[in-house]
Length: 256
Image (cartoon, rainbow, N blue to C red; front, side):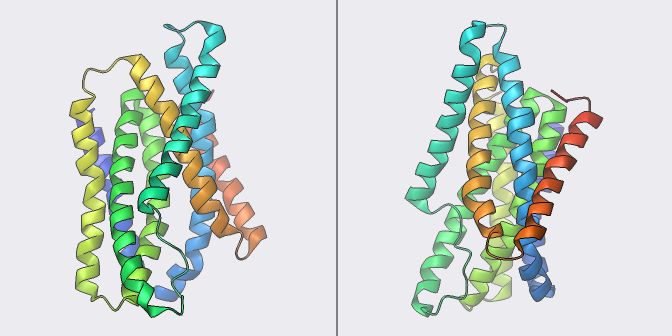
């Protein structure tokens, strides 16, 4: 399991660097298509939360919890995850602002700091969620990796755009991108050892909290961006993301 956590967390982290490189070499294409990738990622994340993380949380909790309390406890923890991410974002502005064409150039320095700090912390949380996914099973871990990978790339594109608008040199931007990318495998490995002997009850609770965080990321950060342009195409991408994760789950034998 450790090799799975290590390899897939590195792959997830690399997606941030991929977003940076796309801005370096295909700026117009990356900026135009990032919203489509966000829509697709939003669909993947929502399907992961509702079709896999929540059902798996209920399933793991059922042997030790009275049946009439399982669903209530699970959805309370989903709500806890949602509210926790809202609180964290309110405190540290976890997600970078997506409008990098602001006229007030004096704001760019502040945006750069928030973008780097927020995305690094977000990447660390992604690593924890990925580890919990693999603790629940290889299939859940694999689908969690896919969801993280897809939503980190547009974040990398947008953060890189902000840094370049702040007249930051490309070499420095790339160093920051690598730092953000390395946060995911770092936190994944640390959490793997911290959670080495955890019970199914704890994994169940963490999966429910992870589901709440995924719903928040999709609903507050990704989907609002998809309403700004080409709405009907973005709707198709979102539904496509849901459908693909559903069929991947069926293919891996993890349909609920």
